[in-house]
Image (cartoon, rainbow, N blue to C red; front, top):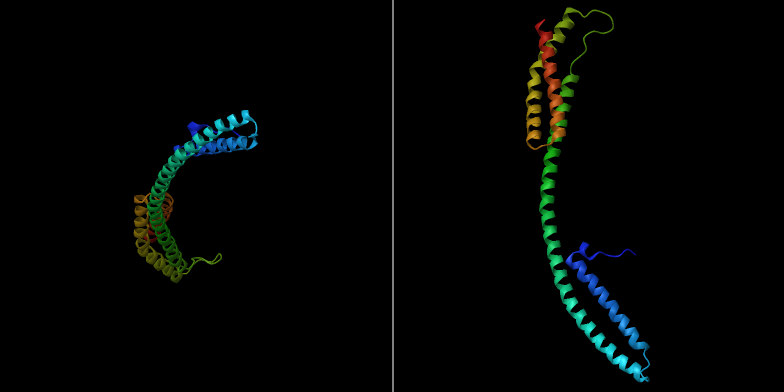
Amino acid sequence: MPSVKLEALSEFGRIALKLDRDFSELERLSAKIERLNLESESDLDHAVKLLGEFALQGQEIGRDMQEFSKALEAARERSDAAAKSVSERAGRVQERQQRRAQLQERLVRLEQELKTANAGLTGGRKGDREASEEEKARIKTQFAELRSRLSEFIEPAEKIRDEAAQLKFRRIERDAQSMLDTLLALRRKLETILSN
């Protein structure tokens, strides 16, 4: 078993280690006293000496127990303070997590609304045949409607991007900016088509 470096331990750990060593010494002295032959005068003298050491060791353990009790109370207070701090931080984590989820949900809902609006458009040419004037007029009307509706999507995308930037949710900010870039490019393309 690797040796424990006292300087690496907290006060609590150092006291616990000393207490453990003191208990081991108490057990060692007890075992020695048990093995002595009290019928022998020299063993009797040795037993008297060991009883004195045993009593001193008991007093040392009593002092160590008091120190250990104080260290244990201090450790409990530090643990309580840490638990309170983590509890407060957990509330902040949960709040930020909810804000992020709300922004993400708004962005997903906006994407769905855009897909729904886009799905309403019908294609232009079918096969190789030329579109009739009536089809061209219908498509141009749909493009004009889509262009006018783009602000319904651009403004919310800007708001989501700006909120995400303010709250430092970089991924949502990038996603909203990407959607915004696509919407602005689509608006430019529609304006070009409709001006011809």
